[in-house]
Image 1: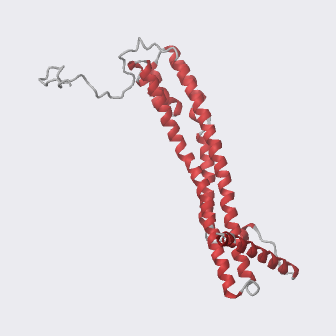
Image 2 (image 1 turned 120 degrees about the horizontal axis):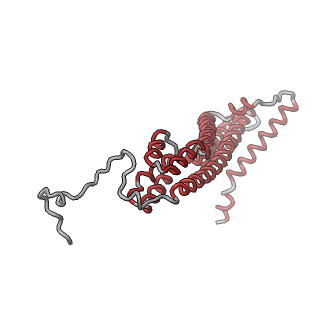
Image 3 (image 1 turned 60 degrees about the vertical axis):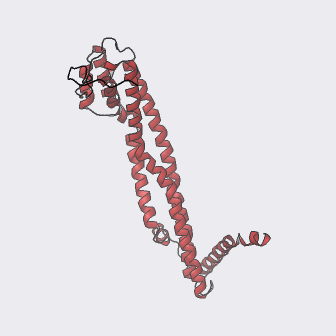
Length: 271
């Protein structure tokens, strides 16, 4: 048992010894006047082939953040002009005009109001259920792309870890060729690949997670305001006057049972 405990830290100790050797070699090159400061592009190249997928992840992260900021804004989900337009329709009692306005200008707010208007003939409970269902659909629709930010935040450190593993394999390969003292440049390059790949994965993952949680909270706040505004529109709705009324052009498929119409069909047997 004690022997196993002593053997477990061996890979970590080997990594630290390689890092120390690399630093010592860098100091030796600097003392000899052969050291040159690396640019950002040199550091990226040092990360090896694994930097290609990490670069693609970074581009996707930036695009998703920009797209999420645009989509989750309150002005995008419920434009002020559309809100005021529907308020005027409701004040005038023109619910058919309100439904047509929602159909002509689709947005999250109009979609929710339209879903409520379609169901006003079925009563208050059915209308509220339709409104909540449409809000849930809008939330799901808006959250789909945001979830990819979380995926990037989880995957990029793992991709960087793959680069770390391959860099360590290469470092041990360089040691096997002739030792750290005979192949200093190759060993330094592999150690650099280990560090750059790990750091790059973390540099992408941290802002991806921050962007995901920021945009998720921003979206939830905007949808909460949308729900409040829709509730204000329908608060004094005269459901008793709209009973049985169908607003909109959506076809209703369910009809009276065939046996009631006198078609000769028999009513189903009761259990």
